[in-house]
Length: 350
Ligand code: KG4
Ligand code: ZN
Image (cartoon, rainbow, N blue to C red; front, side, top):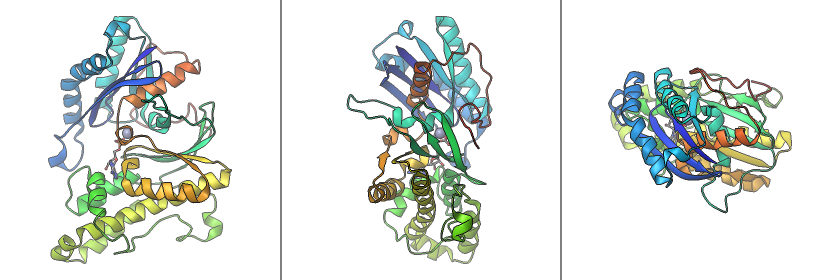
């Protein structure tokens, strides 16, 4: 079965082809036009998707060595994300499915991140067969979920305010870094001292009494943002410029330590022996390293999608569509764009 996946929820235009469960192509174009604005401009994003979508889809089909007439299913992100941006990919995919007379499968973008350990692009790829705790950390979402082998899942924690990616992007903006600041902080932090300044870590065992902390898998990053802002206001521009790597490393450490502690805590409290991390922030080198160390220490298997599958990509959209089809989900003929996150379909809580 050949599945074409389309992703256009934010500032990546992407198309991928999945041939019998294996990724045969995954073409991603990241929009650069937003950098000068310090964040994604929705209207510019929609126009850029519109400009690129046909050529990106054609490139993915050509790279997969098939023709469009050999496609069996077309899938696209239906939400959450920027409404205009989603509509470009969704309408393109639905129109193409209609034209080719093949089924269309709408996909929830965040669920696609959650299920990214199932993305297979090599013969020796191992997908989780046991229940696993998924930490999904993107620009707009921070979710802890427990995913069962039948693909049903339970959301057990989420951010109460800012997402982890937002914490990177907004504190980076305060430091004068370009958008998206996450990868820039990652690079700067590699040369810095993470103990340079102790920024707060909210809702952790350190910040709360053990009684109120136990079983609390929610996150909060807005306090960190305020703390970074007020601390920076007290420093001179020269001091900030001199210690930029140290400040970046300290901010990164505050975010990463919370993510690791909560994820390991969730797995241990549920007696689960596997963890995956997904979403753009899972590309962070310190998060990958610290989560690996914590998993090794606790005898937990860690599933880490390749870096290209951490940030937005269409391979995850095609993969989740394939998983849904294999579980007998009925393909819908029409689907409306859903800009806000909804996890009602598979989630028992959250
Ligand atoms: O999943 P994603 O590509 O798009 C959304 O669905 O939001 O995530 C984008 C987020 C941005 O906040 C970006 O700064 C962050 O992922 N990010 C990183 C890194 N690479 C991307 N954050 C920290 N370290 C990185 N290496
Ligand atoms: Zn994403």
